[in-house]
Length: 122
Length: 107
Image (cartoon, rainbow over all chains, first blue to last red; front, side, top):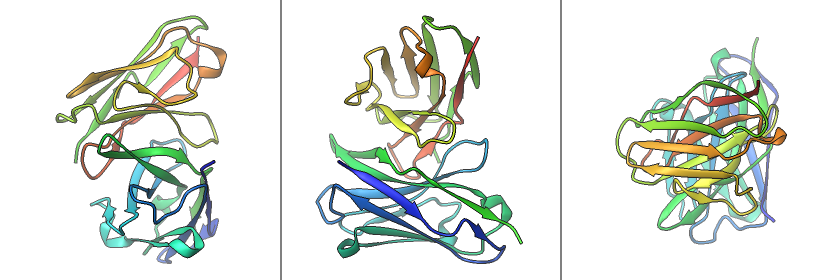
């Protein structure tokens, strides 16, 4: 059974760096074809894809946020970490991590974590 | 970036209705499209992948079709549990992009 759970601060101040952790179970981050990605959703708005990392450490980022994002994984801890620098109130959102499945040569999200709401305010 | 445009933004329907949601891509994405259902305060749930493949455990009243730039999600007979917001997402190329969502409301 694949599960993912996000953790991190619920409140950050403007200009601070956000660090979110996705702890996974039911699969290994080192298994060929596996990946984990992050998306976010501001209150009442649509989903926005942020970044992902694959089993071979290949990483992809949203071009609009690339300069602020870093994604890493710790296979021994079953964790994927996303950091976002220079936080702003517009970054207030629910942040989700999701499992990436490999099918027919392509990759997509199948299982999602419950999400964690991050508010940016002084 | 590939832009994904859904229509309508909101849809009012009754239980038992046939419902169709459209998603258009700004360039061809072949069949590399997924549909998700999201209920308030909950994470998205995968319904359809590769444009028309039904995810395991998803009721057969959900179906997807299309390729290239135009796609549809159809609910053949709307059930009370189906009132939610639906998102399409392309995974043909990076960055992955989502549509703006279609909210299915009770009429």
